[in-house]
Image 1 (cartoon, rainbow over the protein chains, first blue to last red):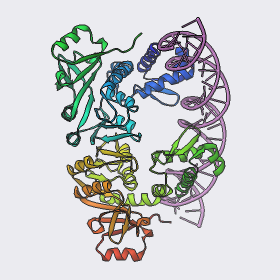
Image 2: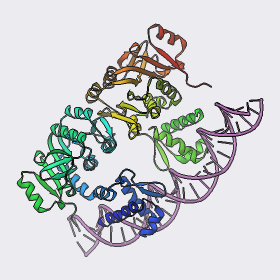
Image 3: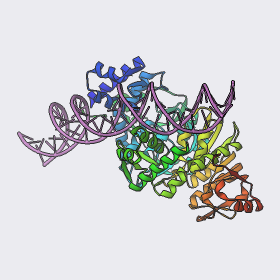
Image 4: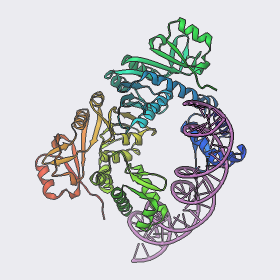
Length: 258
Length: 258
DNA sequence: CGCATTGACGTTAACTTAACATGGCGATAT
DNA sequence: ATATCGCCATGTTAAGTTAACGTCAATGCG
């Protein structure tokens, strides 16, 4: 559990440091069985941190810059899962659920597979792949211009598609939070998310605490616009109280009971 | 080449007949090396006809290719490739190309990878997967309700998305042809295709000869509405002449020069 | 306090892949 | 026409990966 996560983190650090590592080197370096190394790197590869190469692993080519940081954010699977599980409380069978292109919302999608029947709407290609061909899930993909960085469809076509639809609940995330303002880096993404806000009866924001006290280029919305803001516990009491005083419907999600 | 396609067709038939087959059985049944079987089924899996299962292969569960007829349409690769190659004559670098959800248009997409730069629009999930993350191809996905039978997005959302766009050329197919009328079986699909017709300057229909003298539930359009109708040579002189007399801009495509 | 459950890990046999070698076949040049 | 080149399909083998099963420890629960 915790230990496995730490082991994965060590592996990722090691691979990131060297750029490319043979699997046998990992076996030797960490002194565990080849099978265990495989299981670890499979998970890291699935998270998009590493890439398997038949005999070796490399860092994912795109995220060269803040690799260590990005990894840390990505690997926060425990936090993401906790947020996703908490978000399920706001979804009922039979409803229409809208998901944005965040990896957090994607984590929610994996859990939605058990809340059937359901209609799900998203512009995320990863989430689309998850929901395609699932019995009792009516899936609507929001089209638009494909954007590789987000692995999602965005742009005018997407905004207009959203505007035609209505969802019971929107589950989304943001790039950064400062005060009671949520930010998004990309102007086209922000428009899509704002359209999603307008098209949903209930709005839920999922934020891991590492995103607080940061900004990004564009203002997305005020936290008070959301029916619930789910944050992980690392947020801290001081900030939590400040948000609640400002009228934010905050709910702290425990990552794990250790 | 031809022979390899036939071998793949035999393999697919065999797997479809039995539903699931162990790879060793295929090796024995066809009397070739395990490696060759792997290479064949890898390709079939990539085409979405089969699914590999570590030691065995099954038919793709989505239902799209389960009927032998459906499969044959898919695997008639020689005809499809010939049509697709011919269709390339009507596409120039820099244009906006719209592709429908037919497997024939999907074959065109594979060839479009070399005609860059290009903007491509489609509602086919298979084609979307092909065009995603290709340099110098600007890809726009038409969203909508996912329909597993066609592995495509259709419905009102899709129709409206099409209506917002304009393409230089539409490349599409139909379920059946009788006289000078093209038919499509599904009412929702027909609406999307008609919207595509309205959104394109030039319209190209790709038809393999097996579809002639058949009907389907809904009228799609008259063949004279297309700027070019590409048909495979099995069509026959009599029918070809009749179509031309009726004002159809017909072009016969040779499958292969033997 | 058992007793079931869960997750991590190891072991092995079966399976898959990469990489290189072979041979056929058509195309182009001589 | 014949030689040669290059491309595929195929075979062969070694290296690598996976599934399946078993063990063990931690956790949860009556």
